[in-house]
Amino acid sequence: MVSYLALYEAANKALFSVGEAEQAKANESMEEALQLVEGEMMRLTKGKTLFGGDGIIGYLDIVLGWVGYWFKFGEEAAGLNITTDSTKYPAFVSWTHHFLQLPLIKNNLPPPGELLRVSRLVMLRCGKIAE
Image (cartoon, rainbow, N blue to C red; front, side, top):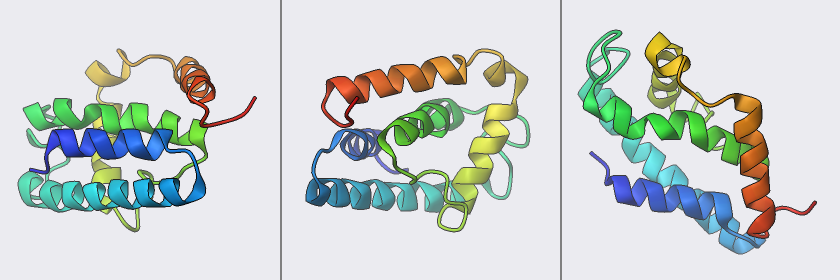
């Protein structure tokens, strides 16, 4: 499986890079990391909706769960669109949908509006976006 640390670092760079050249390089790194995740998801899920099986949460589902929910709000706040491209990452997008629809997960996530507000505040404070 792709290094969790490499994915986390790529995500942080994609979300918090400032400047056109730095942002392009960071987006490329995030896309490379997601391509690795995509390949591993296809290999490890073996056609099931989640790593643990259909409707069964596995360890890797929990480890990667933040990407499917939290990162999309960071992307929206930063004006990016990386993790939602179903043509590039069909397994990842499908997995995200199934994972986030599980009652155990869905009922315990922070409200979307609040998470987007916090994401925008973080982006503003780090200089990623302007007021």
